[in-house]
Length: 126
Image (cartoon, rainbow, N blue to C red; front, top):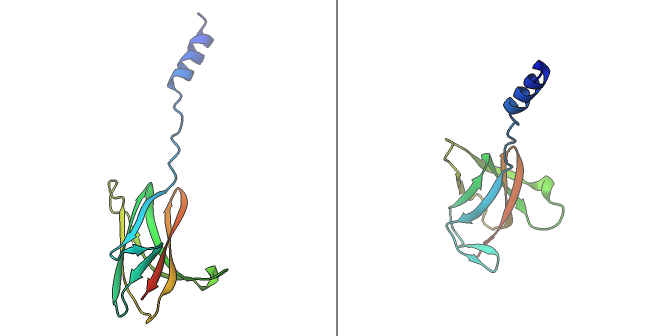
């Protein structure tokens, strides 16, 4: 076997394909209030609500409040965020102090890692 063939064989054997990070994946979004007919029902007068997001391959989760209706993205308000604390941490939480007397909005969640995945919860105050 020639020296060149040995070199090429060794080069092919030692080449390591770079590992591409996985994209964020939202597994679940929930709150401490029940979902009824696709809406989180928040009792009138409630002062705070806790949101829980389970997300894989995620470093940061952003929590946005967006009014219902069409084309309201420009009216969104960032109400909080949570950061990954260690490699096993796939749980992100926000307790939001409700500063509105009425809610009929969407909670828009963005899981950020090597890309972005989005999810929503519909919020309604009775």
